[in-house]
Image (tube, rainbow, N blue to C red):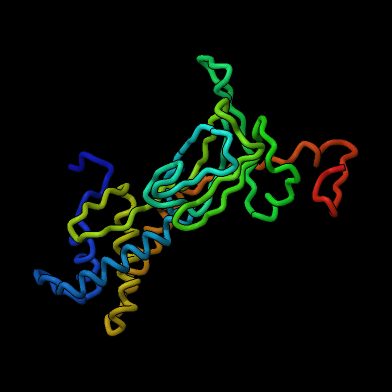
Length: 248
């Protein structure tokens, strides 16, 4: 009986099963080194693609940094937020007011600016006061945050990013993923492997299991925030200036 909600098997075991279900490896046979390494590369490529889609990622991660008066902050290897890989985007953000210090600090949502064009519309970029916007530039290898107005040490900035599904460097690495991912990974990997082995046809049953497995984790992970509209847009008498991109 399973005692954990994790897959917990090695990369070697998983890719060998995929090769066997595709017919490349017979039951009881060992896979060739070149076949198993090629399958691991396809596995890493697939999981990397899934890390970009919100509906194939099971959680958002809350990461934070305290303002220093700097205009920008970084995320990724050796960044202000030091993690192995920079996220492709931020899903939401908020800030916590640290000063004055209390047992119940107040937090405020930050408006996420999703394009550089929106950020450059800010006229006084060096303004330092209560922050209410943040722009994220997903550069490589470090992403860069532009909170605005510029936060001092009185504010802690929190950003929500997708949980990155790590790739694997060794066939003996253990896969730690929620158990519902097992069928989705196994059978979708079979379909990917067919591009390497075109003479081996993926059965209809494998395709059905691949679609069902992916649909299962998609339905479980997909979340839509409540739709909200700017107060000025719904207020009586509000007008919008298309030349300045601001209400008037």
